[in-house]
Image 1 (cartoon, one colour):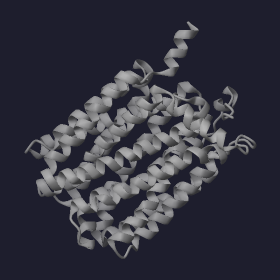
Image 2 (cartoon, helix red, strand yellow):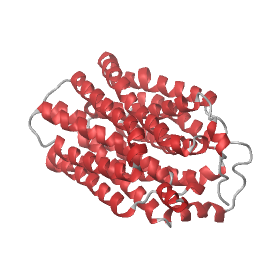
Image 3 (cartoon, one colour):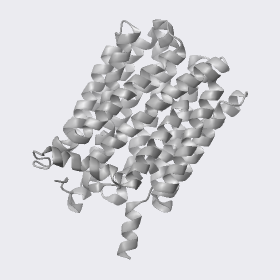
Length: 407
């Protein structure tokens, strides 16, 4: 049994609050990672562990996210997508509150991993709801704004977290910024996201559940999108997780200066993700995905290998713009791969993304311990270039194929 397609008429009137709700839900999952990236040195000092070890907080959370995202491939067929989104937003609140009071590094790992579970719920369900409630010609634009929510979280959050942490440390930043954002996002989603019509998910058997996974994994193009997204996310960890620590430790800049650098990088990512909707419409999903993945990897490779602060920051900013452009284009491409099992496809894609992020954080931390920041950036940058090769050689755009058949 496959998911019943939503009619064009349904998609024409998605409701005024659904797009802001989905954008804010994506915004709400970012402050956890922002805080870890910006205050990783401080958290390591609190628990008496080096930065390379403290960075594994994200690694463990991404492992939890990967495991749960695979389970989501089944849950997305059984339960309402809105309900799963709301559960994810509720878990964000639980994680933020728990992390603020974590008494040890081990408990911090456990409490932060709840964020990984929430990520596996919020990310794919938000994109699945785009496919359900918006027509194809609007999806790239909406996805661009949703991923722009990632960047806006950094634009708003970097100075806010830096300021609050300056007043009362990283624990207060969880309570004073991360938790309120998660709570407001939950309340807006309750009101603004339409529920899936009754009967859309019926009682399914194990064979029906497995059909979704088979539909995804039997497609070479879908598999290429999963692999390319995973490699791209691994590459992005160099800037997302380690750039603030790099600027602080290599150039001895203050936490406030590093937060400004993250803010500018976030603006560049936001510009790339929002512009991605227009660029994809003109050039196509696959070409933009390939080029953006290549340049994101190239500039990630380069930013930590120059001794000048301003040149290094500029390269990181260009890499951030390219990463924003890639995430809009590649997720638009992924969303179209297996439309009859869209919830399963995006859940597995979320697992691939988080596996890549976990791999990037893990490899980046190991390379940092063994070869310093230069080795970290080179190893992760190479993964971004590899992603571009995978997209180019193996991925196809089903929407383009349909147009050729129609003509």
